[in-house]
Length: 114
Image (cartoon, rainbow, N blue to C red; front, top):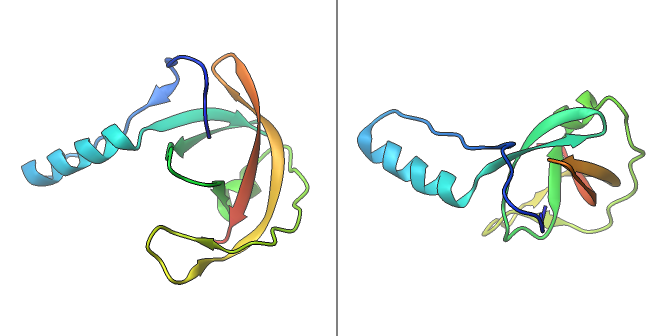
């Protein structure tokens, strides 16, 4: 997802502390892959921000929790994770308005089985 506005207080960052090396690696990963919380179909959900991703995905379990279920449409392409040879199983796609802070954006999501 892209956000053309400024940073908001609703951004959250996850940090896990296990040992010094892992702590440093996680801090670097979280610096480049922050979490953001958006209002999606009546439910507040956190997503990992990946500015290099071609699509926005939501897993089947999270999709089932949405209060207002959007209609799924056929997704005719195959999805592959970076460097993966096996495709990701998809259920379909939907487009909806998402609220981030005080801004609304129309965003398309691909629903995955994983």
